[in-house]
Image (cartoon, rainbow over all chains, first blue to last red; front, side, top):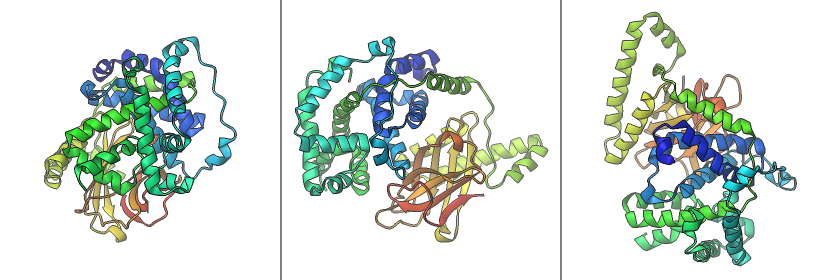
Length: 179
Length: 246
């Protein structure tokens, strides 16, 4: 599909959007907690895919990883730009999300989601928290150390161990996951 | 630092959780280490699994329409536009000279390419300059020149951008920034508050290349500026302008 997009196939981009929009938008809503901002970034991401599809190298990773890494990166960039905004006040009132359509539900692999959530639940909280703070809140290791009141070296070790454990939990399931 | 030290930093890099100095050091290592690049791809795949944990959500249908509308514009051929450096008044003069203006634009473009080739001599830098030139050649692309003000007197920069918001800044002779600080690009439209771009830190020679995505509202920006900010960036400028377009 990315090859077709690189060849300027508009329909292929629409297809990619239809397939991944609910995952990416869910991710961006989790990061930004603001529908308007998340939609704006979602648009940026797919326009970037349109422009950068030719950069994708299938020998160096799966399309899902490429797309999600790009989307998450743009989301965190926006989050940092909006750093002055008081997200703590918003956190208690997460915006409601619309019901997912049947077609989107079909595209979304709820089983895969369940497997990742289960794998994550296996991690001790001390390993899981640094991962979540980094991935969804865009905090660096130093910021996480300050946030949790934990020595920086400990945060580094726990983050690394946590991601290693997650990888082990998901080992062998990559093919079915599509990443 | 040795190879194994860098390797240990890769999982955190896959989560973009390294501090700026570590990230810069690792990125330099990654350019020359295929093994670590492969390692990073593996960790990024693991990190990507985390994207499945939030509740999926449905964006409004208008997003799809906006994306496809932009794509269609991109597919419609149009003539490249090269704005003369500094002032809009020069552009008006050029337009009044008709074809002479077009010739001047070609000469300007050629001079830009030559200038870039001289400026970025090393292979890596040449690759980046090619990207810059490619961007300049895209339909509707524009180029603006930034000059150093008092704090950054000798610095110069060129910003190329297209109407989809893709932008590349190439800067040289930038003074070094203090620890914990970075340069930040700003987009200014009329009298509105400056819109923040990305932050960047120049190399030891004062050169820097920044790829950015301009906010949609900034496509019509008439002034671009660079200030020194905390390395994570600011939402509004907190220092004097080091470089600006005119």
